[in-house]
Amino acid sequence: MAVGIKCLPAKKIIKTMQKFDGLKPEKKDTVSAFPEMQLFANEGGALPERLYFREGTAENKFNMDKDGVVTDFARIGTMNKKGELCMQGQHFIGKKEGESGINLSMSFDVRFKNTSGSHTIAELIDGTKDGKSHYKKMFPGPMAIMVPKMTHVGITYIDEADSVQPIIYAARSGDEVSGLLVEQLNNMFVIGIEDLQNLNADSLEIEGGAYELTPIPSIEKMKKLGFGEDGSDKADEENGADRADAE
Image (cartoon, rainbow, N blue to C red; front, side):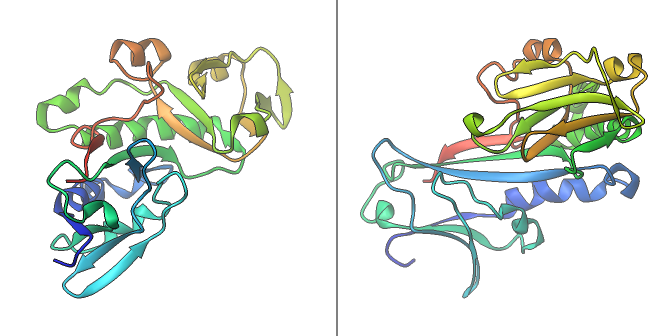
């Protein structure tokens, strides 16, 4: 192995992604599972110079932003399970296992495909039902029955909080309907599907910046299950998210 390069088998990651291939097309028309990976350096440390997929002598580079987020990690789902995920940097030269100071975190986020700012109630209902099917794929065997019903949607703005002016409201025939309850859990705004229906709204409108929309249970249910209390509502990699030393 070349000096300064650390590689990990990609088989487990790719197999996890391929679990979603078994879902029927009608379960994937509104929502999809998006894999996310982020690299972390110990305090004061630098991130690896590059991250890439290697199969034999062929290399396929991934793009990583200044915070270590791999912005195009979803591409790994199309790659060969026999390949490796590799990192290159001074961190791995002459270091024993666990001493590189680099950690990586992987998660799967189930999100609505539509981010136009306007979502019909029919779309939201379909997405919450299909979202449960996606989440069940993340949990092994009998644990899948523990996945709760998705009754809400969570809105997370992508831009920095100080540059976002959240505008979230129910609408009917294009006109705003007052009275929508908007709860908040950390940086996520939470809307109940039943609340929208009780207002006789036909759509949910989201303005103020780019965002991600996720099917979720109620805040109360998430807290009972131990999610969301530390700012994270993603499941374990076998269950949805995994964080480990790069060694």
